[in-house]
Amino acid sequence: MSWLSGIFVYQYIDMLDINKIREDFPILKRKVNDRPLVYLDNAATSQTPKQVIEAIVDYYENYNANIHRGVHTLSQEATDKYEQARIKIQKHFNAAKPYEIIFTSGTTHSINLVANGFAALLEDGDEIIVSAMEHHSNIVPWQMLCERTGTILKVIPMNMEGDLMMEEYEKMLSNKTKVVFCNHVSNALGTINPIDEIIKKAHGVGAAVLIDGAQAASHIVADMQALDVDFYTCSAHKICGPTGVGMLYGKEEWLNKLPPYQGGGEMIAEVTFEKTTYADLPHKFEAGTPNICGGIAFGAALDYMHQIGFKNIAEYEADLLAYATSELLKIEGLKIYGTAQRKTSVISFNIEGVHPYDIGTILDKLGIAVRTGHHCAQPIMDFYKIPGTVRASFSFYNTMAEVDTLVEGVQRARNMLL
Amino acid sequence: MQIKEIQEEIIDEFSMFDDWMQRYEYMIELGKSLPLIEDAYKTDDNIIKGCQSKVWVHAELQDDKLVFTADSDAIITKGIIAILIRAFSNQKPKDIIEADTDFIDKIGLKEHLSPTRANGLVSMIKQLKLYAVAYQTQIK
Ligand SMILES: Cc1ncc(COP(=O)(O)O)c(C=O)c1O
Image 1: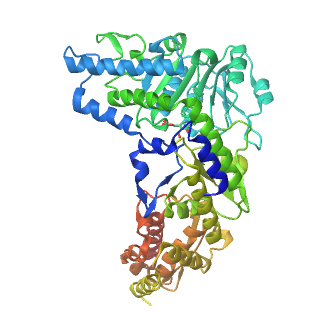
Image 2: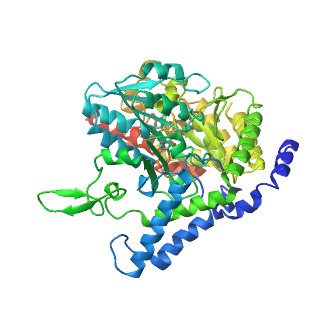
Image 3: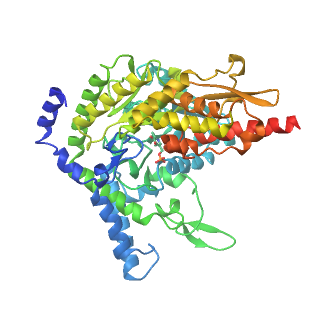
């Protein structure tokens, strides 16, 4: 560890006891290729603390039952816990009503739900606006919508730093604009987008806004009412929760306007062969038996994050980012993609003359987990004219010493590969 | 030399190394001796799918033997395809089709053999064998 990181560690002992936090994550004790795991793929999925794992075990050991339909005790207990989790999520995101929180299987499901709903509301010639730095999850469902409805897709361009060009966005808006969708934080670059401004401007022309919060949720607490956003979504597995569950926030008036996405049990009020009437919110959008355990564990994950403190997390991650950025830039030929002023603890980089895949392979041999490739954001890679990047994404349980290990690893890979 | 013999030779060479670093360094070295594909053949049609990096392979029949050339934009991938081509190039299609590929395991690259691994080694082997199948029918 360098003297610099020593100072950082010292500074944080009061605020976040990282070593103690690491004890919460059993997987961090693992070895990979005979070396201690250095997990720096947090933007793809975060690790799970034992508090969340225990919630999952508790569910299956003590009150596993189907919800909302049983008269028996277990069913009632499971229903209560599930609905409590919904309220935890509501409070966390400061939504006005609990039923504005829809449980989904994750961000992808949420976006498809909304895009599909808009298919019924849009007409030929309507316009929708997307940013140039979206995850494929927030591009493809809307493209499918355009194919079905004749809606026109417009793209907010970005600059070399990885910031959206807001003047261009303003020019695109008109009374034809019906929906604007954009990520809160870019998964490939880490840019924190000015969603406040994006939402206000869109509302100025009467358009609805969907914000993809998949990458933001573990770093930033988004306030639904303050933002006045129409839809917001995230996946639990990126915020220390389990896979296969997420949430969609929708303003009540919008959720009432959108038709249901899937038909089935739970989402109905009355069914005859002539006609079915749909259940009230949120059940209208929750067809079938949901991921009950996942929803409850999602709530436990939020509890855990709040116990650590989002403010502490943000401050510590900002220093991890600053340290990692300055150390990585010392490596000859290393270029960072995404240098926006406001970004989360994500560093996408390449080394001149080296393929990102090669670096990722060597780092894996050293026990360091990073992501390589286009990060499901091919348009960004096309913009920079590169095949992909190496992406190291840091979480509050990473240490300054792990940053040093990464930097040494990249240096070593460079020496081997060039 | 027969495919089997070449594979034994490769296994021998790799057995000299006792850690992954040396193996990878050697593989990178082998990548530099890869018989390069002509630029004209570096088309999208010749790209092997399933690799995170680009891999192009071209096959040509010379007399009754199949000769492979290839390239990749990633250096480790280039090493892997170089090893495969060393074993399979200049061989009769029938022998290529029938050849075992467990020597990859024996030279310590087992992790690359997983079909879910994004490096496409499995796709590369499949593609070389597909070429062999295609040319086999031409010979008859
Ligand atoms: C910005 C963004 N949007 C959407 C997704 C998709 O999330 P999920 O796969 O959990 O549905 C991701 C995941 O990588 C993401 O980073």
